[in-house]
Length: 124
Length: 107
Image (tube, rainbow over all chains, first blue to last red):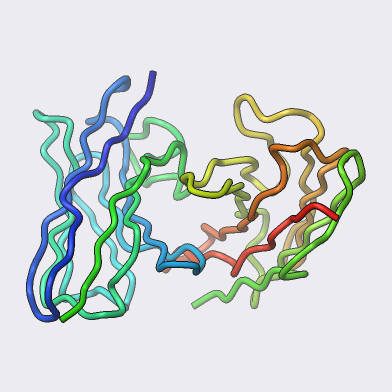
């Protein structure tokens, strides 16, 4: 079955970096756009970034633009989020999510399914 | 940025009763709206897309309606697993944005 497993979360100090990974299985990873969505403790959902199926295009939320980098390795079925210059407000559970359908064009931009999430805490 | 506003913030409903959740967009998004359910301690799950199309495996007690700026998610007869938080999300334009959520609790 389709599975997304995030890893790499932890406790880090403000101003430092962290790299999250999302390992996919059960589907042809290279045919899907992929996303990162985060949720601060007790708060709602915030879309963070998207990457096209082939890595050709990427978009970011303004809150992370210039600090976060999304990438993927289709040979290893893995999605990444490089988070630099972390701030306290980046503290959240980070979910990776798959695009709705395989698509060799623009993504559908709704999320199905989601991984279980990995917690990032930015604190001194 | 398109702002999504959900109401009410909390909805108290008895099991077996109907629940009606609202989502409003700050500008027209056509029918480019998805709904998700998030149970405590779990990741969100897709319920609806295209404002009114149920995702795979979603039971018929869930229905969605609306277009433009006003949308509704209706749960016809609440089951125990439906007591959760519900989010709407627009995918009409970047950035993709979510509503603040509606918590459906047991009355």
